Image 1 (cartoon, rainbow, N blue to C red):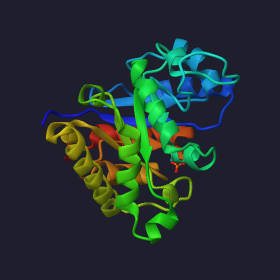
Image 2: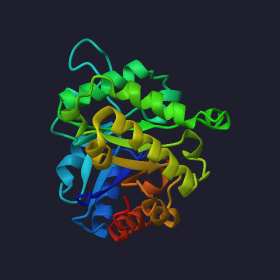
Image 3: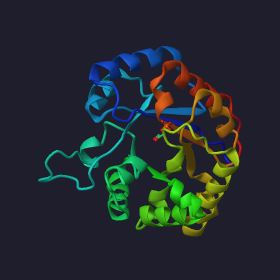
Image 4: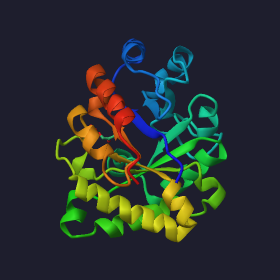
Length: 258
Ligand code: 13P
C-alpha cells in the first residue's frame, strides 16, 4: 500500500476569539515544522476562518469548519452552508459527538451534511463513536456500523475517496479517560471491515481513519503507532502550543502502521 500522510486535526471548539485565534496561529506557525508526511488541519471558530485563511501558509496549515448547514443557500437565518465555505476550508467536521449529543443532530442531518460537503468539494471528516452507556451494553460495533451506514448512505465510491473517518468514543472526549490502544485498534478494524463491505478492499485500506478523545502529547505517539490509525483529532491539547507541536512531531516520527 502506498504511504499515507498522517492527518492531525486541531478542533478548537468554541474557544478563542478572532484576535486570540490569530495570535495562536502565529505562535503555532513558529514551532510547527512543515513535514511532507504530515498534514496539519486547524478548525477554529467559524468567525476566524476568513482572517486565518489569509494568515496561514496552506502548505503548513489547512483549515476545517467545525460545523455548517446542509442546504446550499436560502432562508436559513443564522446558518452557514458548505457552498459558502467552499474555497475557504479544505475539510469540514460532520457528526461530531457534541453536534449529535448537545445539538441533537440525527442520522438524517449527518447524512445530508456529508453530501453537502462533497457537493461543495470539501472533505468531510465523519465522526463516529459510542457513548459510555452503549459501550457498557457491548454495543460499540453496532453503533459504529449504524453511524457509518447512516453517514455514508448515497456516497459513491468515487466520492468516498474524499471522506475521512474519525473514531471518537464519546466517553473519551474531554474526560481524560483514554481509550486503550486495543480499544482503538478493534474499533478501527470494525470500521475498515465495514468500509470494505461498502466500497471494497482498496477503499478500506486507503481511507484515512483518525482517533480522537483526550489525546495529549504524551499519548499521541502510542495512538499513532496503533494499527489502523492514520492520524488524530485533537480537542483540548490543540489549544496549547507545546502540546500541539509535540503531537505534530509525533506524527512525523510515526511509522506506517497498517
Ligand atoms: P478532547 O481532545 O478535548 O478530548 O476532544 C476530542 C474531540 O472532541 C476532538 O474533536
